Image (cartoon, rainbow, N blue to C red; front, side):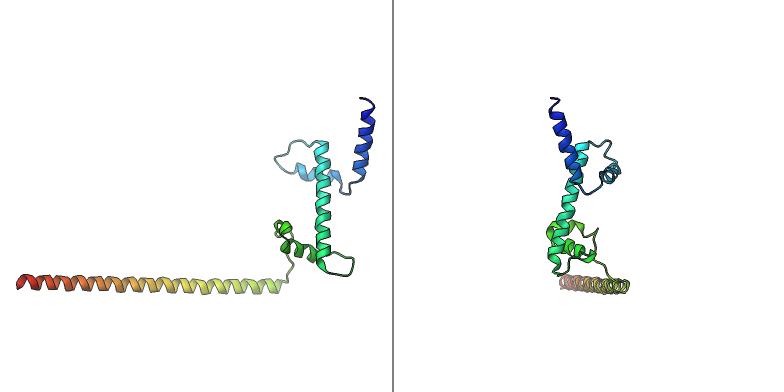
Amino acid sequence: MSQNTPDKDDQTSSNKKNISLPMSRVRLIMKSSPDVSSINQDALFLTTKATELFVQHLALASFNGSGKETNTLSYSDLAQTAEEKETFHFLTDILPKKILARDYLQSLDQIFTTKQVNMLRISKYKFTLKLNRCEYLKCIYQLTTLQQIILMHLQIV
């Protein structure tokens, strides 16, 4: 058994050398969760390695999808990948596309104008319904009045 321990230690140390992300930072992030009380070294290693592989996968997908001939990867490439690929769609809130402030304000104006138009349409529709209901009630009243007149006329005759 004592012979297996050095091999295992060598394997663990060589695995730690293969990781690019600092395990102390990953531990800090994991401990920030209120659900985590203690972190096993193996769990920390696997989480760090999985995070590293995920970041590599995102970077490769963004780089291949960018269509650029240069060897650069920009924020807009990552945001575009998050928006276009279903696998990374959950990242759209974290990696939103950058827009200029004036473009954002214009889109807000359009949304606000659209909401106003929709509210006007809804209020016009409600008003039309009220008018139709009033007309309907008037017709019913006129019919009942006419019915009463006819009944009264029949009783007299």
